[in-house]
Image 1 (cartoon, rainbow, N blue to C red):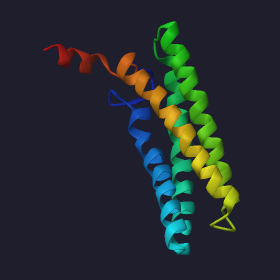
Image 2: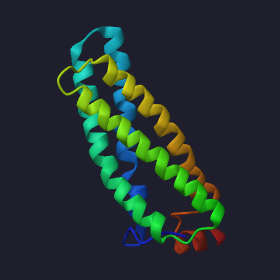
Image 3: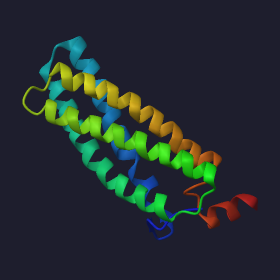
Length: 150
């Protein structure tokens, strides 16, 4: 079952989400590297990664919302999808705050704390997204399921 945000039969949301996840996770690691090395390069890199992840998440969110509105789902799956959406939007908001808080001061304590908080929100959102794909089979096309049965 998949929504209408597809490209040649493949779900666009699932194609886009690895980018913000990787960028935001990378920002968390570069913050840790910056804290241990006291090298400003890592904090500057974190800001770039947060920025790229935030832009990518906006694109993924649009595709995800189209799928949320158009994919056939059970009531239980729709509840999980709503939770996934709200946790994801919370992560996006927190990372957007981190980006702006760190625009002038790369090692801003508030910005770094927001990056950590955003990573926690992202973990919860990712877990719920995994439930949608793996348990409820949302985003899995009919062709994919037919191939698995063979």
